Length: 288
Ligand code: NAI
Image (cartoon, rainbow, N blue to C red; front, top):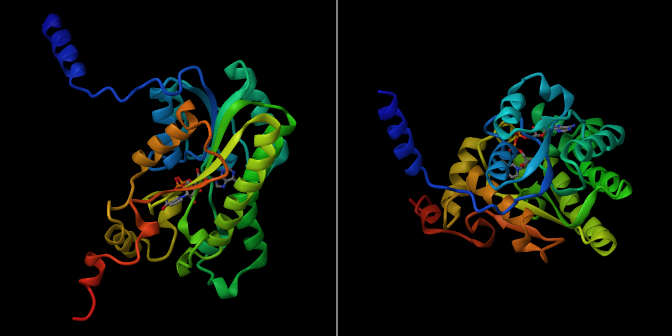
C-alpha cells in the first residue's frame, strides 16, 4: 500500500511541468505588496521562490492584520517585515533587517503598491479631496522614490540590481475612472527615469516599470466599472489581457541577468493594447 502510494506520488510529480530555470539562483530580494493570493506581488513571490531567489516580504502594518501574507511566507520560506512604504524610518529598518536576514546586499526589489482614497471614496477627478490626493501620490508614487533613496543611502543594493514597479497605461492616456491614480502612475514612471539615471551611474542599479493589463485584484477591482472595462480591454488587445502569473514571469525576467542593460523604461505587458487603435471585436459592437 505504502509502496503504491509512493509510486503514485512519483508518477504524479513527473507530470508536473517544471517551471524553474534557476533564473534567480543566489539572488536576494524584497517584495512589496502581497496582500492576498490575487495580488500580483503574491505571484511574483511564488515564481521568485521557484526560480531560486531568497527574499523578504513586506506590506503596510495595517495589511498584516488580514494574515494571508504569513501563509505566503511559509510557502516561500521567507520572513515578513512590516513597513509603511511612505515612512522613511520603516524603509530604513526594512532594508537593514532584510540584509541581515538574507546575509548580504539586495539584488531585486518589487514595488507593487497602489492606493487612492479618492478612488475608494468615489470622488470624481474634477472634485478631488486634496489631502487624499497627496496620500494617493505619496503611497502610489513617492514611495518608490523613498525606497530608492533609502536603499541608495544605505548602499543596500548590489551592482546590476534590478527594481521593478508596476504601472498602468492611464499614465499616458485618459481613462476617466482611474482618477488621480493616473497622475500617480505618471509620477511613478518619471521617478523611474530620473532615479534610473542617478542609480545607474552611481551603482549600476536598473529601474523599470511594467505597465500591466487590467487584472482582477483587490486594488484593481476598486476602480469604478472595472468589470466592463476589463472586458473592453480584452477585446482591444490582440493577445487578450495579460494575467497576473504572466506579469510575474515578466518581473522575474527583469530581475534576472538576461535583461541587464534594460533600465529607465516603461515596459508594456498588455497583450498589445497600447499599440492598438481599434479591433474588429470592438468595431462589431458599433453601427448596429
Ligand atoms: P493589491 O491590492 O493586491 O496590491 C496593492 C498593495 O499595495 C497591497 O498589498 C496594499 O497593502 C499595498 N499598500 C497600500 N498602501 C501601502 C503602504 N502605505 N505601504 C506599503 N504597502 C501599501 O493589488 P494589485 O493589483 O496586485 O496591485 C499591485 C500594483 O499593480 C499596484 O501598483 C497597481 O496599481 C498595479 N497595477 C494593477 C493593475 C490591476 O488592474 N490590478 C493594472 C496595472 C497596474
